[in-house]
Length: 62
Image (tube, rainbow, N blue to C red; front, side, top):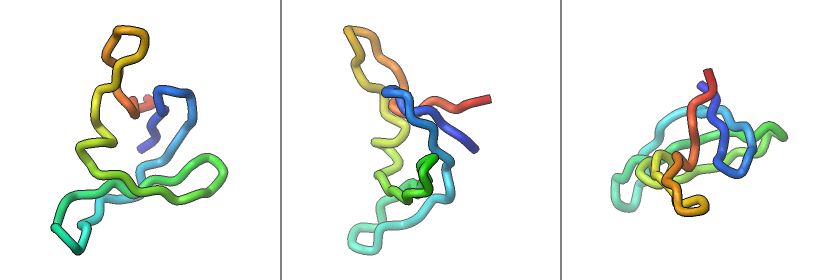
């Protein structure tokens, strides 16, 4: 599934993973340039304040 970052970048969710140190859920995702990133699941799906309005950090692209 593809997601657009609130600042405009397009990313593909690769998989969910478990962080070994505390067993928290992580999102593994790939940027349009092929770079691989990880972020805690709750941060990936978090709402962020943009000019006083809450928007998803990453919104699904249909």
